[in-house]
Image 1 (spheres, helix red, strand yellow):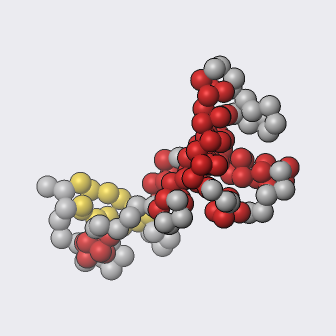
Image 2 (cartoon, one colour; image 1 turned 90 degrees about the horizontal axis):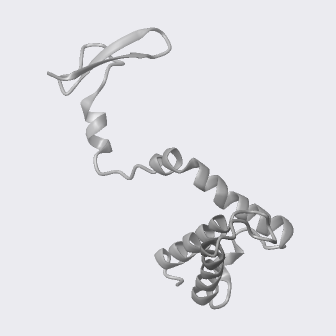
Length: 130
């Protein structure tokens, strides 16, 4: 009744049936391994779902380090982070909403900067610093 898959594993092919008993092949699918995965965070979904957005955030952070002189992740310790990050996100959002796509200073899209400031707020909120 399960779905049959054929996988290649270095020394040859093997098959397993999803939703049924594991086959006798020692390399074949082991349902106990799958059961241990239940309830675990699928962090890989972040990378596979948002690779371009993550690169955009990295571009903002790299620009800030290379051209503004910020130290890596020093935004975590800025004074009055709640208001500073909110104000920066709002400035970039307002410029974007007025039709200005790119930031004059960095040349990057305002949305990249806005996203960074929102992500920084989220990180600080989760870690209890906001």
